[in-house]
Length: 591
View: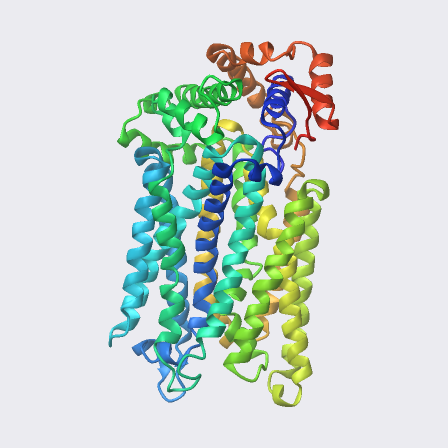
């Protein structure tokens, strides 16, 4: 993913060049140069794996005979174990409602308790939710599942915000881009693993009415494994250096940076990173002082109010409201492509497309996970080359076309699947192609766009607003899909297809191409000219105040000289000799 904010200023480029010269390169290979950094990368994957596994595991559980037996009034026909569609939708979507609530308190918790302790609190919430679900083998099983999934959703929603935040703040700058890619891949890996675990456990005790409760208890219980590992790992992880600096614990922050980089505290690289963190903290405090002077004191009540006051301020001017429209509507269309209808109800959908048994439907669902995981890889590698807008448009057109083809096949064959099995498999193939289109486009790119369109001082609040839109629409899709599949049949795919075409039209008409744009260029696009320049001036003041400008100048790069700065950056990019601690070596290209 491109550095958020677009083209760097001369000072930022000079600081980047100096850091690259000291750190010895960037990108995925930099993860292997330091075992502590590699451990952080694995930790990031664990958080994403937990999120992805939880998203996918329930789709297979819903189809299991043993699970249906414990759902009481949620089953409409006891003889055929047929779900009540509305209640099934509520059972699935309650997790997303909990996750939406979790995103609401995550920022407050992370700032008050620290990222580390906020993760531990949410792991505890998540574990409680899973335990409640796995005690559902009682006559009131449906109530336990419902309550447990809401509690689990609270933990998942909050962790989905705090874990990436923690890893981005604790990781060295040269591997943060790699961590973004690993996080996205680990989410799709978690989805894939959950689908195949469902397929395997479905055979415990047989697939008929003699099926053992372990068939559904095991995949739900396995959620505890990454959660407990995440919690135990956090006990040995340091506090975020950024959080420590922001709360006046600067000596501790410097020590954390030194341990993470395995360097002495007085090393130039540690000094440079520490100064950058200090400048970022001071910039945020100055922005808060200018925009919300009545909330600048860091009390718990002020921090809580700030989450809502700051988001509310985004609606008060037309240039910021245009950004709100892009962030919230793009997340609306991401969910109404129908992706989570597929992930949550894939076995039900495949049964509706004529697959002969639940086992075959679960097998086809497993292929969905593999296809989505593989499709994520090119997006991570090449989205900066392709651009955001064309990827979103082509992905939407591809998904919409798949929906329309599935609708046409279903309309013609829905009452004669046993004699037209090839048509059923053709529709299944279109579902697989649909998730491929989503995996390389709207999956990662929607999140990239909503992170790039905001000014620095509003970014965290803008992203939180977009995430809130994502989870709320996720909840609605999960709620209505079963009724749509039963009542509208093939019309469901036409509905999702038309909305996805609408998403392509919205991106084409309204969403700017954000690849490589500076903050000033973004201001011109949204009509808030001058805002970025004011923030640039505030940055210059902060950099001078903390001594960052002087430190970069001492590194041998004249910030005031555009030629000197460009030559230094060029040497690092093409691999010319650089000197560190008196030794000459060749630097790899900067990321």
